Amino acid sequence: MRLEFKDLGKRFDDRVIFRKLSGSVGPGEILVLSGPNGSGKSTLVLMLCGLLRPTRGEIRYLSDKDEIPRNAWRHELGIVAPAMRLYEELTGMENLRFFARIRDLRLSDEELARRLREVGLDPGRKTILRGYSTGMQQRLKIAQAALHDPPLLFLDEPGSNLDPAGQDWLEGWVQELSKRGKSIVLATNDRRELEWGTDHVVLDG
Amino acid sequence: MTDGNWNGGQIMSSLMAEALAVVAKDLRTEFRTRVSLNALGLFALTTLAAVSYTVGPYRIAEEDKAYLLSALLWIVILFASLAGMDRVFVKEEESHTAGLLRLSARPHAVWLGKLIFNLGLLAVLMLILVPLYVLLMGLPLKLGVGALVALLAAGGFALGVVSTIVAAIISRAISRGALFAVLSLPLLLPLLIFAIQGCSAVSSGDPEKLAESLRALISFGGIMLIVSGALFPVIWQD
Image 1 (cartoon, rainbow over the protein chains, first blue to last red):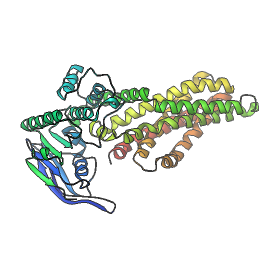
Image 2 (image 1 turned 180 degrees about the vertical axis):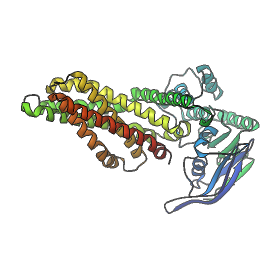
Image 3 (image 1 turned 135 degrees about the horizontal axis):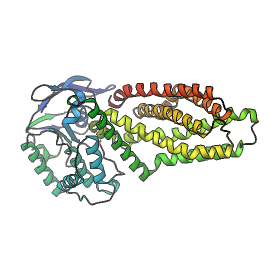
């Protein structure tokens, strides 16, 4: 799966966020979006995953054969972003179970438990999310994003709130996904994460 | 993975399964926070207590009972239900969970799930409120309990459909409170008139008028269901 965007611009009323951004990411590639705070990295991520419409320019999801229509993009992508939260009144297991069901995935509780263990969470934990640390919530968001094994992943500041061991794990996980042919869009300013990129788009604000 | 490879039956059963997942999630979060249930219960019991204390069954002339008590009943149902049902989409936006829901579920599964949840909430409200009201206010039921249940089902269905789509619209707006009132009024007014007419027919023993009101409520609810189903994906995703 390949994502291409061309001459993207976004303005909110009189405020121009960015004018003309182009880029692409394909299987096994990591496209890094960087830039100062307020330069529009998260806005660009929301546009690329279809939650915001660009003021100008075009975004295309391309499969091997043809273009994927906008209303089917959600099948192709997973996302971790600070602006998108999970349900605080549910436990980690209940959250994953809910997202599996609304994606019509037939995943057993054993499989969901394995996914939780994979991101370093205890599947037996009965605490609702409100009782989780921010780092643990971030790990659960990562598990949710990868639940349906999407070919395209958007990671907006994925390492934020993770402890050093968590950041090491994250690096290994991203590299592993890249080796498996996933297309990854990474919005970050973290120096370590910047080095993972195979291509860069710099938003200058 | 795309819907195009599936037949109609598979799509409907998977849509219903996804909608029921939304209902189950909402029920679980509601039982843990009780935001809507508390708002709904508090409003229902307060208005019921105020109405029965100030008006009661003996201060209304016998010939006015059917109309006045029917109007009061539906006003109490309407305001109590709106106190809880308008939260159904707003809470997804306010807790920043709407984004992931949009990217994970089909719009129609979300709409159907929220509609079923609201209809359930309304059924619980009516189950508690209406028997208490009939007892405390002495509402006569000359056509019997079955006729009242049929009217409540038809009126509740239409009310649930309207409230759910209005709740979806206001969740995307900034001045939510004012917008809810402005949007609800033209949609709820005909519904309320039909429901009150039907209820007074049950009370005064007029089966023809009841049948007329039931037809009007079912048609109104059906039309709103079709319009809502067509409109929701646009409201939810843009």
